[in-house]
Amino acid sequence: MELKTLDAILSEYQQALAGESAPEEAISRFREFLVEHAGLARLDIPGRGPRIVAPAESLRCFHFSQYLEWYLPEKRGAAEGEVEAARASLGRLNAWLLESGRIDRDTFEENRESIRGGGEGPPVFQEIAPGEEVEPRAPSVAEERDFYVPGEYGAVISGEFLLTRVQEGILYGKREGDVREIGPILVDRAVSSGSRVGDRIHLSAGQAGDHWNLLTIGRLRE
Image 1 (spheres, rainbow, N blue to C red):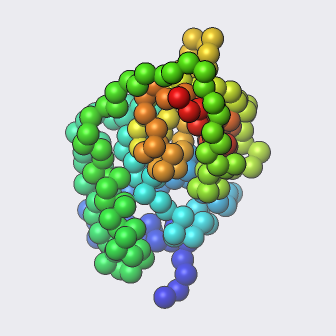
Image 2: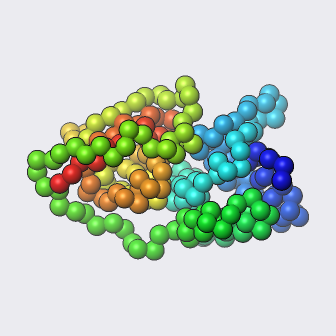
């Protein structure tokens, strides 16, 4: 099969919608999110706007959850009904990607889980024992490359954070002594799934517009 960019794949799917205006508009908005916030490789063409030149496999499960759980409700102020309509549209896209051979069954299942969203309710606070010990989790997170856009960090912040909110692919937290909450911090799904509200972690993140990209993370043990 011919290798295509993610932009070409999304355009092909929009053509397959055959004039279904609402789903086509939903995919256009999802593409806007990918262009502006996912940190995927893109090419700015004068008079035509940016195009995503990253390969199709750059689309990951956490992109769906970040779009549905952060971008639409928090940045765009979408109502619950709009988010659910977008969830249905992305579900159709995910099914088409599988049927057209763009993704395998495992990727389809991971995407579907992210699109459906978590059903376990908000995480609970945990007791944090005094006298923490730093346990390096990893020098970096593999999927950071999906979010990193060279030269676009307005600021870099690091230190010990107390997590205040945890969503799939998204963290929020406060540093000791700070009043304001830092976030959303876009992270890999493996990082958010292993985190809970009340956890203390040491991380560094780069500011890209109105969100932060995770650079490094270390977990503080009880």
